[in-house]
Image (tube, rainbow, N blue to C red; front, side, top):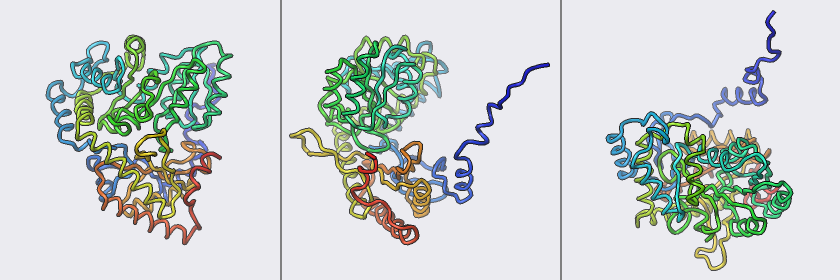
Length: 433
C-alpha cells in the first residue's frame, strides 16, 4: 500500500486567514489591487473605462511618455529584436548593457556597476551572494521585501531594527560583534511606504564605528534626490561612505530592471557568482534601451529641471493634504547649511489606520477619478493602513488641485458617516507606536 501525505499542500490556498475578508471586499468592489490600465503611465490615465488622475505610480519624472525614451526603446527593439533568449553570461549581453553599466557607475560615482533583469533580482542576487551563513545582516523594519528575500536566501543571521531608530540599530551592531562573521547593514534610502529617508550620515558613523559595511537601496531615491539625481546618498553627502548602492529602472528611469553600483572587485564577484544574474534571461532590449535613454535625460539640464519640479510638486501636495486635515509625514530636516533646509519626497502616505476604512476611502477616490495605492497589514503594522500617494514632475497644479478637492470631498462624506479620520500630527506618533 502506498503511503499518502497527511496534509494537502494546497490546503492553505483554501483556508488562509484573510480569505473571507477578500471575498467580502470583492463583492463590494473594494479591492484596490490588480486594476486594469488601458493607457500609458501618464499623470492622467485611462483605467477601467474612465480617466483618473494617477497618484499611485512611481513614474516620478514622467519619462515613460518622453519621446527620447520611447525612441530609445524602439531603436533597441529594431536593432536586437524582442528578446535575447539567454542570460547575460551566455548570449544576452549587448553593447547597450555595457554602455548602461558604465554610465550608471559614472552617475553614481562608483568604480563599476552591474545591471540585473529586475530590481527585485538586484537585491536578491546581491544579498544572496555577498552574504553567507556565519555573516550578519542588519535591516530596517521598513526595508523593501526584496531585501528581506535576499537576506533569507543568504542564510546569514538576520537582525532587524525598528524603522529609522538609530538607537535600535546601534544595539544590533553591538550584538553583531559577538556573531563572528562579516556584518552588512542594509537600508532603503527612501522608504517606499513611509516616504521618509534614512539618516545616512548617522548610519555611516555607526557602521564605521563597528566595522560594518553599508548597502543603500536607492530604488525611490535615484532619479529623485540630489543635485544630479543620484539619490539619498548624494543628497546627504555620504556617497564615499556607502559601500553598495542599489537602484531600479522601474521608477524614474521609466523602464524595468535593476542595478548595483560599487567597487569593481565586488561587482566582478557578483558578475561571476550571483545566481540571480547568471541564471535568468537578459532583460528585453527595449527595456535596456529605454533605461539608457532615460538616464541620459536625467543627466541633462532638462533632467535637473525635472528633479526640481517633482520635489516642488511633492511639497505642494503634502502641504495641501495637511491643510485639508489629513495625517501626512512632516518634511524631513537636511544637514545644517543645506538649501532647502528640509525635503519632502514624492511618496506622501496618508494615515488612515483601519484596513477596511482605507479600502472604503480608496474606492470613493477611485469612483471620483483619483487613483492611489492602498497599504494594508501586513505590508504595514496593524492599525497603520495607508493611502500611499505619489506625484510626478509632469503633474500640473490644476491636476493636483482637482485631486486635493476630491480628497476633501471624500473625507467630509466619510467622516459624516463613520467619524473623524486621523488628523495632522498623528502620522509620526502612530508609526513610532
